[in-house]
Image (cartoon, rainbow, N blue to C red; front, side):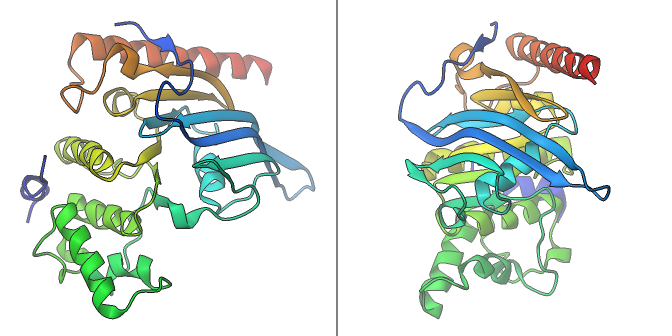
Length: 289
């Protein structure tokens, strides 16, 4: 099956303003004073993140955008609990998870799908449930529901090498969603897909966000992806990563219809402004170094 065929299986059910923060529905994620550095071989430390304060409103899709070296993936790892922050607090759904893992309520879709080639699609999804207090029938029911949810009915017995890139991405997405996370993290999971399949996955993300009531925080280098998918975009300055600006796209262009058209003149203008912001903060960082 080609990526175009796979895409058919998906069930599709003005100027930027500086974002004032959560407008409604409360705050799903709040980061306060996050700092992170890593040891170097010469005994020094490489500062990766500095004084990160970030709020993501419940039900929003928020993008982290910036050039390489701005600490975007490290920030996701801190939120997920995979990497501890040196200082600062992480609050998810009103609960303080500083210094502890938040994985039970956070799903994570990595840049690589990280599917185990010796496991079927069904078994890859079930892997996320192996430490859960479920019997085999309950586990099978949860996995079947997820396969249906991401449009992969009939493909549960397929191995990763038998699936297209888009289908593999949906298996990885289903694995991240099977525990019903309140917050979904994504680290450029669609960067290796062709344009048509990537657009289909964007539509799928919005559909699942609305269906499951999730909040999404994702990393991207693709300015157009941020402009068409996100409600808010946080631009990070590099070396060390610092928040330069958060822009509120949804205030100017709500997701109606669900996915913005990247060729729409208003979206093109948003893309232009975001590129200008990245260029400006990068130039300022280079001038300091």
